[in-house]
View 1 (tube, rainbow, N blue to C red):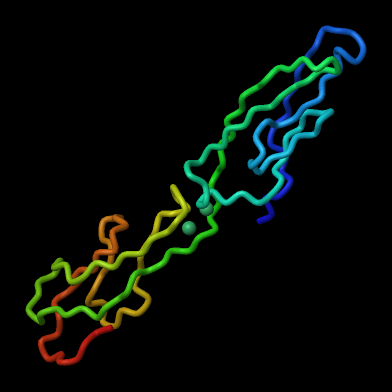
View 2: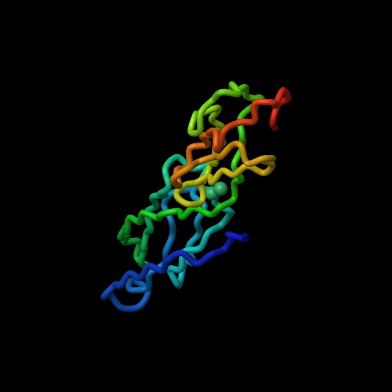
Length: 165
Ligand SMILES: [Ca+2]
Ligand SMILES: [Ca+2]
């Protein structure tokens, strides 16, 4: 998704003087912010891609200056909320084979897998599922909980001597 040059906001300042003393030009006080302002219209746009995950916090504070032709200034503080986009996939930690007793009863927790996602809210919520589950002996995340918990789903075959993956 291209986030560059999105119109964010328009500020308007009024000046009751006549002529150049009443003509307002706009600027942003901060140097290192990903926004620019049109000096005549007051329209603020993004000047570069903004990655929420690279920010400390999800808000950026700027101060817009309106200056008239005579050098008088007014300042307008703005707090800009940066929304999240789903630009990170879940990442699993190292996965190991698990061992389970053949006598384990249904519902026994055999392992918990864990992945992380740098996004927030629903963009960072991870739903786990078993891709391969021969015999349906195991189940992950019962009761709609997104914990990565793997349980025994039915009585394990007593003649089984090899692992289930
Ligand atoms: Ca994101
Ligand atoms: Ca994500």
